[in-house]
Image (cartoon, rainbow, N blue to C red):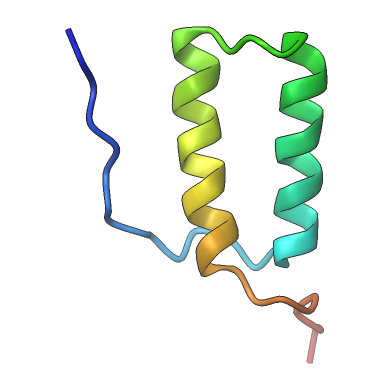
Length: 61
C-alpha cells in the first residue's frame, strides 16, 4: 500500500529551517542511510516543517 504525503503544513514549531535541517541530518545518520516506514513518515513531516520554517531562528520577545 502506498502512502501519500500530506500537503498540509501545520505551524507546529517555532524552529528555524537550520534547526529542522539538523534534525533531518540526525535522522539520516541514525538510519544508516535507509529509512524504515516510520522514519520515512518522520522525514516527510520534517521536510514539510523545514519548508515552512523561517530561515533565521525565531527570537523570544
